[in-house]
Length: 366
Image (tube, rainbow, N blue to C red; front, side, top):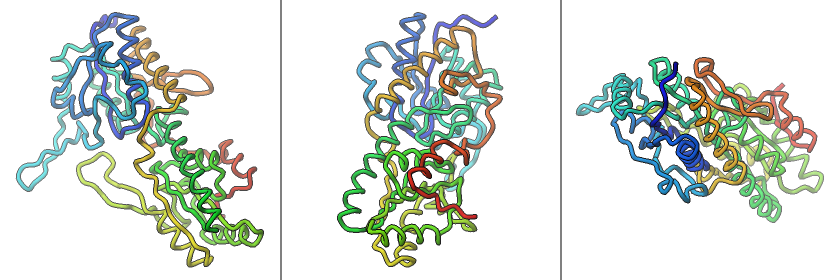
């Protein structure tokens, strides 16, 4: 028999995105209104759990945060409880401090933890669940690449931001007869580039799942110029790469769960296009602007629904799972069944077919 819940905690881990505060609000309000539970927030993701930094979340505390970007709890993508970096002088030692995190959780007399995050956060949640921590996950990331769910909190807002940027670059591209290369985030998955490229009317889309042929990119730019279309819009995912080549790494960061920082493909590609076509080309990297701002209505709906669903699942006695969305309805995925890595774009995805029908190309190698 499951222990009756009286007090729960919630944390937001990994990178920030629009909709996190909507999740915090939904979990808190539904837990208090429907079940009379006490709700506490853990500051700065797993760092706060390791250090025992908790704050109460009342109805007043979460009032008015639905529209706010970011997270009122703070977050970090630099903390791995199972490989925690501690500096001693000039040396860095790595320790497993998960037991310390569990002790703080139990000292707070929490009955369950709601974990909001991406694939990295869910991998930690999976390991803590095996250690006996009663946990429910909620998927969030602008990359939309968490295994087991078709949608994640933050994705819709990032697509909206990217699409607005593409719209604005369309006008300057047409005015100056240029090729515009727009780089978006996404790490190893092309969901954000694909969705924003389709919504923004891109002529060429380059995603990690389909390594591209530079000669095909040159050919499409020249073809458009020869037909009087004197500009070209290219949307490229930061993890895209040419066939036979490698992904461009901006830098590597020590002591983090994601040490490789991708980026720079847009500037590299713009230079290659200018040399290969003699057409003026400019690069724009949207970067962290995609994570900012107020969530659009789709993310508010998804975040609120996920938050309520997580609370209801806890009340029904469910633990060790993540709520998700699949085939038009809410689903639950056991954390133990979450495979490593990220969810990639299938090569037969309807959005890919729609792009091709609109005349866009992916310039994929044969």
